[in-house]
Image (tube, rainbow, N blue to C red; front, side, top):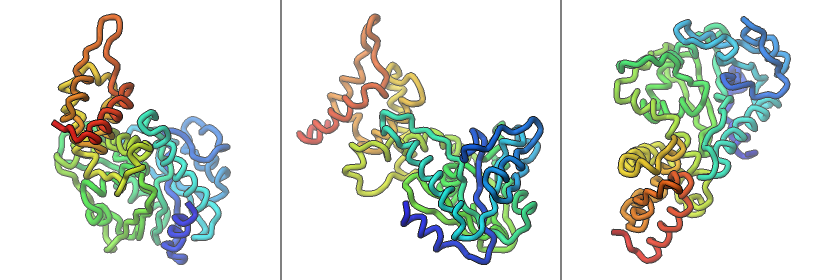
Amino acid sequence: MQSKLAQLRASIDPVTPLFALVDPMVGEPLPGIGATAVGSDGTDQRAQGWGRDVVSVPLPKSIALPAHQHPYLIQLHGPDDPLLEVTFAIADEERLTAQCGGLDGTGRSAHRIGGWLQSSMRWPELGMLIAEMCRVNTEAVTKATYLRLADRRVLDLLCHVAGQSRVAAQFGRLQSWTYLSANGELSRLQSQREHSERLRLDETEWQRMQRGEMLHRAIAHYLGEATFTETMIEPPTYASAEPALLLAADAALRWPHRFKSDVDHAVCAALAMWRPSMADVSTIRVLLDDLGSESEPAEPLSIVHRDLITLIQQAEKTARFD
């Protein structure tokens, strides 16, 4: 963690104002910040808790969230501010919590530290720019209104789907946005122009964004599973997770009795990222075909995943892939 923190500090321009972006939708990342009063955006409590100036990001009225659940910015005092290390440690803990337990975990965790931003804009202008970026803008027909970019996983997926250059084209005088990825790497987006260019997703791009929750869970399962990471050559990416999730969807159609909840899809996708051809193993097909009985129905895939791993390893040893 210390090397990544040093890398983050080294990337910060000491002259340009620095902010930490927080997503409080599922709670505050810092213990001790009290409950928000009805009708308040929580700014006073947050400023007191963090000991720094805080400003809320005013989301458009079309996004039906109470004000205290809107993202907010904390002004940091440059790269040596102790709160930079505090917010980095929280972000890293969030990442590891999602991965805890591997395939036996949930693959889920609140990600409330959205990253570290540098901008010469005035606070209200910066807040309005971020708020506009969080408004869904797509050619697809959808009831969704909120692109939750303060959850850094959404920003990371958006960069994969739309490309970093299109995402950063929205920044204008938001000079940079750095965040911690699921792999524990720092990703940095930088503005290349003074004006902001709105990003609009086409229908296919929006469909890919809608798979984000399951993609993030599958990647977290993968990264937390010792069986996979012991032999991992390169960290998993969305490029490997997307086809794995499609393989899981096909498996759910073929063996619906093994897929009872989202966790079964996420675990299956993680297994498919590890071994995409696992459905070609005859012993696996026999196991998944088993319907059980009325007294003992077939267990969901998330329960039998250790058996699947054993069968994959046995097949690899004997090279018996059909």
